[in-house]
Image (cartoon, rainbow, N blue to C red; front, side, top):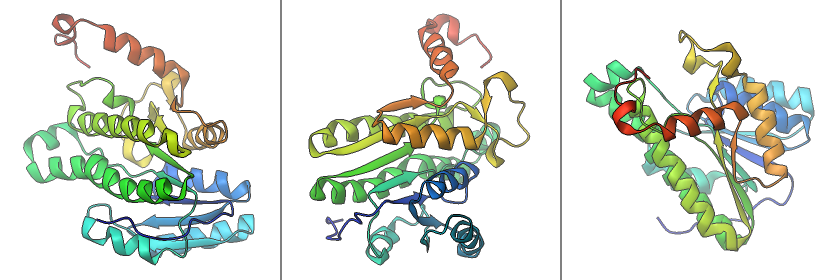
Length: 253
């Protein structure tokens, strides 16, 4: 797909892809309270309308909404062309975990997990990255996962997609650093969201969407490269990665 010639909005504004996830909703509120205009994109346009009305009233900001399905890559060019202007910040909060055992047995579910967490996000971000590179500024935020730091039997299909996404963001950051484009990789540990509903989460290691949103906002302002939204997860994953494979394969993780 060719680079789409479109002017980036100079006013404070942020595009949130996957705007109906719990983390994305908290991100929208965090930016709204800091006087950023919002561009929300997700599959269910009717729910976005309700969400946008609340944000407009609450923060007295401009909120535009667009229908966007990350699995329909043939619509990416049309989606970008339809934007009034491309905001100078894009945050990809798209994700789908599924259930590991079902993912192992069902090829359609496996494909959905892989495309939702890797193929779709890297394709839409790549198009926006080309625009930012051409303009010479912009911020790209990708919400990945600590599940991608090392494959574990409990979630390795989801984790493998997130590992690919993390690597993509790393390479993109390396490419765009010379072009004044900031790329932030976000690695939340466990977070209380709809996606983790029903899972037994360790309270001491589990965060909330508002905390993740606050960390993302601060990290964008400080132009950080990679963040674990709970610092303890950096240590946990460092230890997990250091375990020798002969021992690691015997563990139930």
